[in-house]
Image (tube, rainbow, N blue to C red; front, side):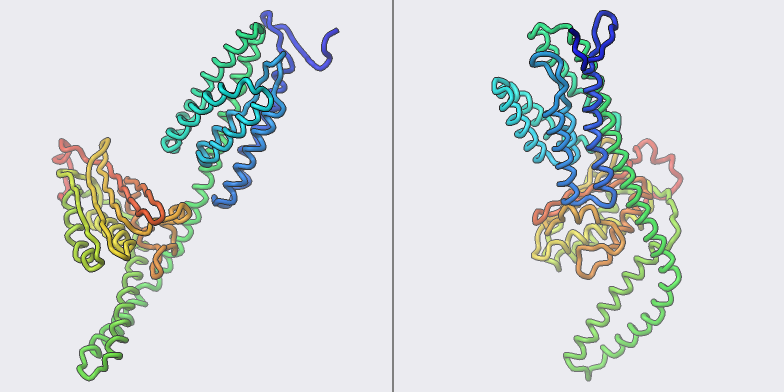
Length: 439
């Protein structure tokens, strides 16, 4: 008597069981992962939401392992690889290791004879995942899909050997269905998570754009009106300070007032920089010369702050952009690095070329930044300094973008920060083709 639960049809001599429907059910279980990602990361990405996302992945892992798609005997399939993959590459490798431990413990209770095989299999996979986790973030969408699919090749081969050993060669078709369904599921999960990340990025950019527009309008309307009376106040204070009849305390008060007026003037300059219309310059800039000028300019400030500033500059590097704005970016980031070392230290500026790009590394030994602080850098009014406005870095990042460059920030609390600026280099053979002065 045939099994009433199974529905089958004959295709080329093979029987397609309800196994396909069971795999489809596992597909919808895996959809818990991108769904939870959409819900949890709709507003922000913090530690709490990351933990909840990890729990959602664990739930998907537990369900797919607890109710595998059985074929016959000990042959069964599940999609545990998918939540494991997502945890390693979209959360943290450390949590991925915990998932691996759970998988091995769970399997050892069901079939203790597989423990050594699982330790070897998942041990190798974990090492590869940890190594590749840094590079994975730089992959394009298609590269991420291909990378995930590559890991299903050895999984499929392992399943094939297990089926051949058991003598159930008629189940090869089910293995094919499993591989196809697994690849489709992983593709969908990666696609939906990446789509959510893109939407979050666009949302943040839109919010920052609104803030910048508001700041620009404010700057254009009031900056000059503030500067005019402030200049008069500064002039009178300087005249009063020159009076020999002032007490020491009065002189100190006037010096503090002048210092605060100077800081206010710098803030106004930052506002005016935002209010200026964007203009793309086509100057040929000597990156080497610009760094040398910034080094000479910042060296006295570094000495006052008990900071040793060093340079390692490669010669004959040229980029396109605005020399004044380039100096503004370099001075701002260098100044931030010096101020991050309140107890002194060493700041290194390295300039070199890599893959057709001019790279500027500004490395400090300061207090460093947390992951949350790194995500907020460059936002209006956000600063790690007590007297900072956050406008300096925001303007710097905008200038880098206008010069077709990019920036990377590596930092760890109490271990310092590295700012890497990358700009497309102008090849030496093209110098003469640019009809602008070299600055």
